[in-house]
Structure formats: structure tokens, C-alpha cells
Image (cartoon, rainbow, N blue to C red; front, side, top):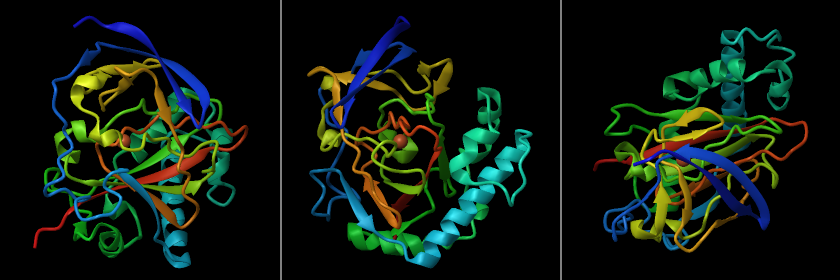
Length: 280
Ligand SMILES: [Fe+2]
């Protein structure tokens, strides 16, 4: 496969957004990777859409989550050598302390691969709450990884701090999990995570994508395969835009990403959790 540059064009809530992706692209086989039988979504009434907004946190839980996220980002700021005190630091103002890409990469190196131990939050208790929306018992322990996995997503204003459109389910350890996206700061209709409803049901012979670790945006390599379009054309994405104390839950095969932050002077921060099925 030859590496080429493709312009990925997509509509997000009817507004055009495009960026260049470098990689080797291919179309898959005539198979649908999402399997209903045994799936976490199997017993839900939102399986066809592939996603749902759920009202999930009480005030105390939300405060604990935000406090822990802030502490983890602050640790990243210190690792990047940013000059700000813990007292002064506001999550939405992140871009005022982190002023170049090198510093930002140092921060996300820390915030991209966290576990339960990095948070003062009872994730097993949260897993129980999410279980009520899937009618399947969930746990934060991911079997194949033999650990939990939590990621803080930071997107500065006027930046390409985005993942390309993708499906987490292409990576084997995410195939059978539930994706959870939680707004923490600066999340609104200009910055919330875009997705394509029902896209977990699109067969592989309609998907044009790279391999894992095969896509580069702005010189940055991405772990997940990048999907640039389907054989039907460019993507039409929507931002479901969950509010504070809500979460967006979705299938790992639902196409999502390109969460460009169009706010002028606010950094957007979201928390990504993943839940596996709890063995009986
Ligand atoms: Fe993802």
C-alpha cells in the first residue's frame, strides 16, 4: 500500500470541516464487524442508533470527577514545565499556560493512559450505574488489557487537537466494550464529540480507512485506524452534546472523532471511560 495525502472533508452539524490525513488507505471485506449477539448493546432500545445520552452523575460525583481531572492535567502541566500555580489553574484556560505543541505533547503523554488509581472516584460504583442503561453488568476492568483505562481528551481552541474519525472496535481490546464520553470543561455545541448515528452497522466494504498506527495528521501519528469516508461519500456527523452530569455512551464500532474545538478562547476537556462486561 502506498502512502498518500487525503483531504478528509466532513459535515459537522451541517458545517464543513476538512483536514489532511497522510496514510495508506484501503477498503475492507464485505462483512459487518458489529455483532449484536452477546454485545453490551444487545439488550438496549438504542442498539440501532448506537449511542445514547444518559443522565448519570449526582453533584458530588461530578465534583470528584472534575477535581481528579484537574489534578491529572495539572500534573501534566508540571511535567511540561508550565508556569502556573495549582490555585491559579483553570481547566478552560489550559491554552494560556501551554503555548506550544511540544508542551502539549508532554501533557497528553501523561493524560492519555490513566487508570482508576489516578482518580479519587469509585469507578465500580459508576459501572453499576451505567449497567442500568445497558441491562448488562459492567466493570471498569478491561479483560484483554488486564487493567482499567481512562483517558483525558484536551482540545485547545484553533487547533488540530483531534482524533481522526475512527472506530475504537478495530483494536481488539476495545471490540467488546462500552465507550463513555463525559464533558468536563468547555464542552458545548462548538466542541462536543461528533459521531455518525447507526454507523456501527456500516459494512467494511463501504469503509475507506488506514491500518492501526497508519494515519498522520499534522505530523502526529494516530493509534486508531483513520476512516476518511465511506463509498457513499463524505461523512455527515452530529454533535449530540451531552450537558454537565450527563454522559454519551456508544458502541466502539460507531464512527466518532474529529472533535474540533471551535470555541474562540476556551480549551475543551472531556473524559473517556471504557467498560467491559462483568463476568457472572
Ligand atoms: Fe475513540
